Length: 425
Image (cartoon, rainbow, N blue to C red; front, side, top):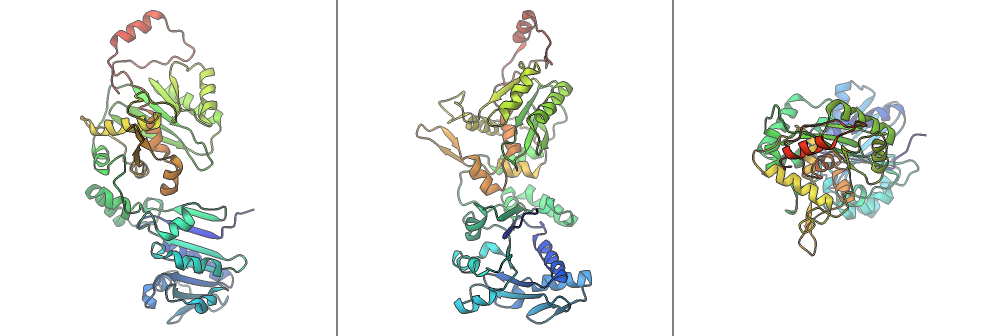
């Protein structure tokens, strides 16, 4: 049976198509059955402030002659569907009762909605089967509706982030504007185009300036050995991600959803046999332990290394745990010349700039939990964590990658390799 959501919360940046998608959906639903639709915003001084014009434009675009447009409402001549337009702030207790029969309430520009308006509206939309649709471009981290609805959604709330790169109908001109904005001002890009709130603190671990530089670098090849970071999905909507890095060049990510332990192990086996990595560093918390055991049983014990994000850091005097240490290594890697190269990836950019830093009582670097990041980002930072895993242990640049599997390695080979090693990340 299809899940019915009481609240549908769509947010993101410019060009994501949220308003167009809501308008089109409501117009076509209103042609199939009688609906009472209220289009709401915090302040509506006139009809021009609402989505009235957008709905009129879409009616004209599709040639929906069954809709009749009035000065203050829109009606369907056959199903008797009605669209009305109101501002919440000017609704007193008596006026708000007029919304009790609403089938769908569309709250637009929801970042401006006050906590008081929401407290009055939410219980008013009480008809059986009624829904509340919310569209917003986040403004601040403490946006009232974000905290009330999306920060901790219940089982009847659907939260979706939609940006310009998710919209197949996004005009090419907007895509070019987004890329230009990212190059000129990464902070503005994150807010305007990625739907991130304006940052109200300076606690981000990775600054956008050094990250932008890594996206702009051009590295064609390297002799550094391949290291793979494998972040294994722990929950249903998380992704299993492989990150491929050779020294100063991170060049590839592979993401997968809904894979069993055996399927992930099969993917890892294929990458090991095909690309001969020097190390595969794996998150062995949760599901990862099972994948690690399968690969170990297949004879890859010399290549794979299990990592617990929460375990003690190698440099314990500087980092709170291994997770903070690996992310700290990303920062050092980004800041040190020759500057590294990252693939041009909006999700990766968003994830790397989302993590906030703190310090414990000993002055050691500490990061906020993944749950907090996921609430703010809308997903788990799986790509960024996979990249962090490639820094789990030092990799020796002078080493020639070998594929061991079940091959026997003689003592002479080990000592000959060790003699050639030169330390480095």
